[in-house]
Image (cartoon, rainbow, N blue to C red; front, side, top):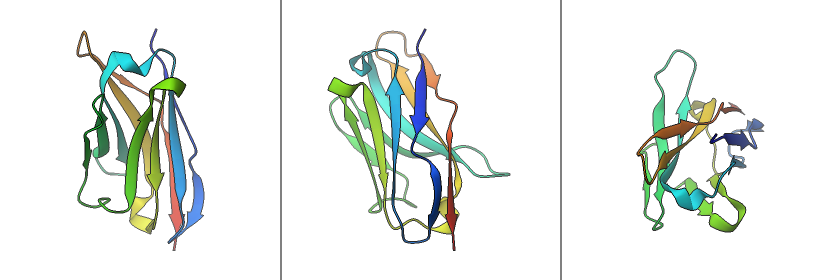
Amino acid sequence: QVQLMESGGGLVQAGGSLRLSCAASISISRFNVMGWYRQASGNQREMVATVTSGGSTNYADSVNGRFAISRDNAKNTAFLQMNSLKPEDTAVYFCKAQSRITGMDYWGKGTLVTVSS
């Protein structure tokens, strides 16, 4: 059974930084795309950043230039480095991975990021 576990969330002041981690229970080489999504209270879940197995990245306009996504196959972990955080970045952040073979999506349970003004 594939499991994704996020960590690294917490409370930070505006302008600060956090690094989120997404640890997988299997080799992440089995995933063609990994991504971070977020859901603020009362809002729909939205894409934040994605990274392919080849290293291509894609970012939401709202975080481009502030956030950086990466994946470390040796550690079976994906990361989201978040800099210059803003109060509007407050949300639960979820990790998603798509199976290279089946196309099935797997989700973690999320980690809460709170940015105070």
